[in-house]
Image (cartoon, rainbow, N blue to C red; front, side, top):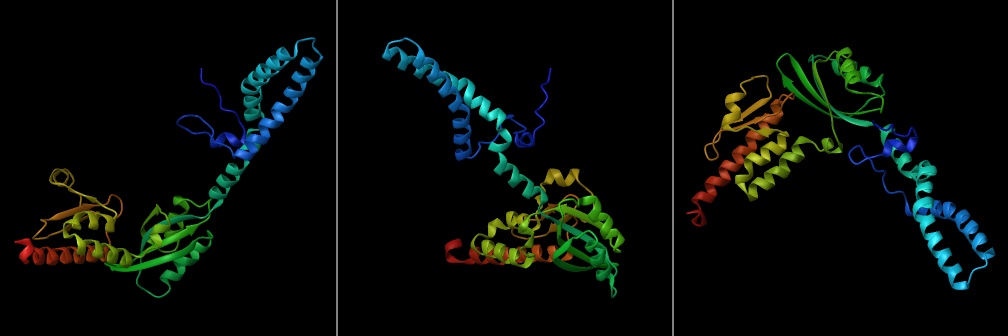
Length: 280
């Protein structure tokens, strides 16, 4: 028979794997233990002092009784009865996180005409969603706009997709993201270019990191033959053909151009190192 979890505010802090509560702040734990043990200590001392026992016996009884009651009664009772108070700081922190704006990455295709982006921003504004970053990529049939959005806690993927469609966007996609998305692609590409300049053999891993994609091997290429823009092939003479996959998130022309430029840099450096006296 499964025991029902206690319906208290602090119960949401319980670990889903081990079922344990987090450690409360030490000060609160100490105060809770004192509050639970003090009445027991006073009662035990009152009873033992009035008893007609030798002094050594009284000390022994007080010591053993207080220890047993503190371990088996006071601490468990304090942890159970004062659970919400003990974990109040963690609960406040959890609620602040739950109420904090969430970051999202979004992509949608707009018509390449005046006012198209304005209509989309108005649609997002109705959800109190703020645009923190935007990149525009020319594509067939319009422009592909890539956003970093800050949305209120109650706004999820469904609401954002509906707002993008209502604003005139087509083929919209939305993904949860982190503050790292605020680093623009050019800065990230330059950082990885410096990495390749030091070690050209790092090209496959560097491109995978740049694109947030997976490197496909020969067996995976044979099993995966879709052509929906989520695969990118980079032919190289030194490293061989490299193919990358990113499920559900097609590569943009700008991403493809950055990956190819990194590959060219790695090729040049590899040939130079091979032709240098140290590489012979």
